[in-house]
Image (cartoon, one colour):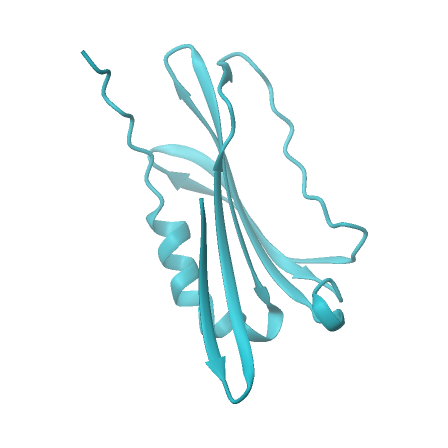
Amino acid sequence: MELHRVDQHAGRKDIATVTLRADRPLPANTSIATGLSTGGHEWRPSRSETIDMCGRHATRVTGILLAAGIDGVDLYHEFLSSDYIAGEMLYPIRMSVETTAADRDMYQPDIDTFVNGLQIVPKPPTS
């Protein structure tokens, strides 16, 4: 799932994108390595922490990819990852946020709403 917020200001467009992925389930005893792909751009981390997500541990990492956007602008990225275990299966949950570094403060309340408000609600079995 991908969400976009677009704002028009004096001839320019500001965009923030939130992407949520739930990868295919794996056996619960699987170990998953999560890494950050920088696409060859310099990464300047600003925060890395373990947070609570639906009673489970998740990793939240934020920072700037230098000169990674169109026209060489710096991009703000935020990543949230958790491995949700249900029964015998592990569900990798990943959320990412991207906007220009210059627009981060404008979109931060929306970003916090998505990241802090993410809930995993198991679907009851159908009968």
